[in-house]
Image 1 (spheres, rainbow, N blue to C red):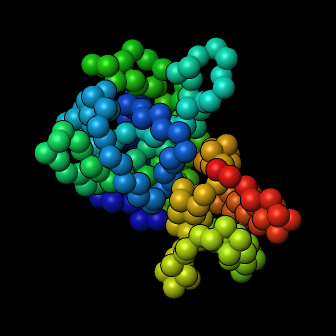
Image 2 (tube, one colour):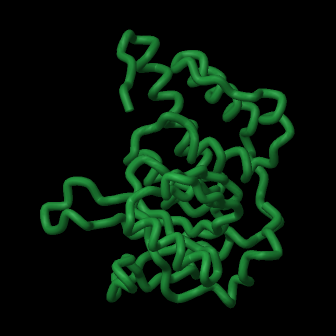
Length: 219
């Protein structure tokens, strides 16, 4: 994935990020996620981001944590607001484009009501590597994807898929296929492309097998 010239160099990435805990929605490097922002606290978050580097950290809430209703998973992905528009009814409609994953080290004092975290990027420095490795089993991966889409009645632009680079393909599918929230988190946390693709293929095969046996998985 070639990074936009508007994204900071890896060495210039911020130590602190505003976070947007959003269940079931994930981004990965190169993936675009449209968002409709209307809650006052998140409108404030977007305004703060637009006043600085346009960067927001998207994280998954840690559902079921007995110690805190505000708990979040420790691995998320940073995205940059690459386009936005304001509506007459007070919403902001934007596109968040993922560019690098991060590990949350600790949550810090909110800024004007916006949750912030201290992060480390080092674990995911490979997200900045333009020379991404290739899948060793792309044909098998595509076969699993076809089976999954047929069983789950998911429409895929196959002509576009065939021309996508391996890394862009896997990241896009991780974000947009109808997978379980926990499965999506596991995919985000898997650092290497081949391992992420292998995990995803296993998840697709299990889902297709369950559908074949008459059990449709609900997400």
